[in-house]
Length: 419
Image 1 (cartoon, rainbow, N blue to C red):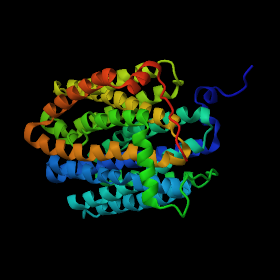
Image 2 (cartoon, rainbow, N blue to C red):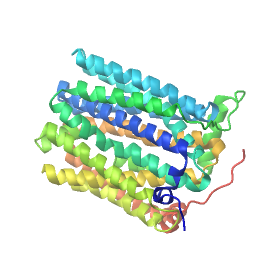
Image 3 (cartoon, rainbow, N blue to C red):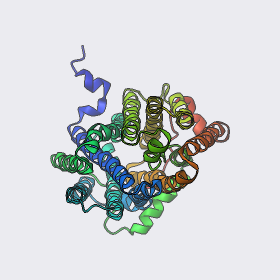
Image 4 (cartoon, helix red, strand yellow):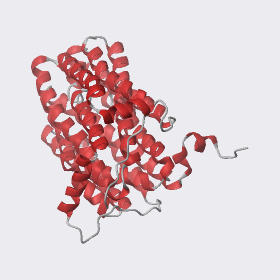
């Protein structure tokens, strides 16, 4: 008879104390992030009535992802827990600053954009260290489950933003949302302190940072399975996930229900992300993972098409939920496939390139689509990119033997790498 608690059997990563602390800290940090981003988008649209300026705020928050490789070098050179402690302090300072500006009615669009840039810099620096530390606080057999759980809480926390901030935006105002973000950031910092695991990557203090980055890039480009997964992620982020800047205008001009519509759409995306990624937490290596990855990738393209043809809040909210679920599952599984085959000495650098590919592309896509939405409207910008992505996924089945392997048996071939 197995006396191990059922939660440990179902979610093996929860057997590890440091993982549980890191998971709780990431949950609080992600709640703070999504609540603040929701507040940013709402207040900029209220101040400007412009999807272009909302896109600029989103762009500012995501632009630093282009510098993610710097965070990757830091994650492989500096003790990873210390990186997280420093970035959490920076995030807390920014959240407190936004709250103070909102309460004093001094907040204007350019301030939101500048502080959103600061939020992006902090997040870009910490994410590679957080991803690498996740693999360090569990055993090798639990990495997949640990990565999936972390992805679940990062994406699922998006639902908490609308739940918490939605009522506050309609009553207290954006200052209430920012205050929640500040409190959650403090909690995330406190939860990191008891973590005992100390880990860093394969970069020593005497190594040249530029050479270290080049090695990570070379490792990624020469590792065909890794680069194939990154390629599908880039397309996914550019064509199906870059809708944040369009949502306030879509809710206002297409659904004709600005505050309620925007809150429900954001809630739908977040709840879908949580449910989708949480489902994956119980999935084991191999099996049907490949089929699920292919199916969710296709649905990620089809869901925006459905968003383009609806003009009712309930239907749009349901579609947003499907979007959130399929997109979260696609991204979560891609991250799991990568983490399972990466060598630890280069893990931080490769995951930073993954972050740069995803976040950097989304920064420019959000900026472009947000600007175009003021001209052609959001529905066509949901429709056309969604159809293009579906076509690309179908083409990958024929053109990429590495992705065919992933779709077929749910595993990635691990390529040896020199240290």
